[in-house]
Picture 1 (cartoon, rainbow, N blue to C red):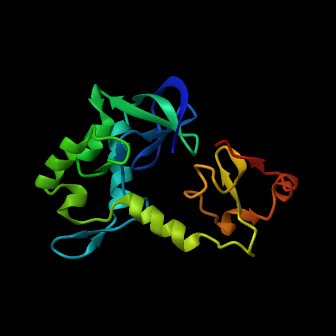
Picture 2: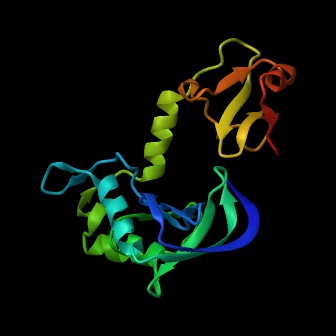
Length: 206
């Protein structure tokens, strides 16, 4: 889910978090239109054997961004990250990641890099040298395995922890279905808004 933000441009030598996330000038940036393998994700080569495609994606972004980047965007994701297109040396870094096979075109949000993905797939570069599961499916499986069920009937308010703080989500809110509760992170279920507020959570927007 994306939310409007003040148009922002940040530049500098970034800290690379993973294959599609950077920190530039203390701003967390999520690369627009692409989805790189998760940090610990593995992919399969056609010749057999697994390889660390998530690590390789991070290394690829680090290489592309090592001389510094300029990132511009006007939206934030639900984690408070600036959704941006980054350039380095006049090159679109987002496009380069997909062209190398270090990331997928994230069709859920944009078709901007579908051509680069088709070229990488045809040339069997990176993730296309064998089989790879799309990262959004990997994340969904991880959420499903870590999601805690309500402790009892009637306790359906979701207490989520994110970059925006401790927020609770009610049934009917647009973010309710997508919110997963992971008790290992300190997230929890509440039986009433009064209970959630008393615990220090605040109501999510929408």
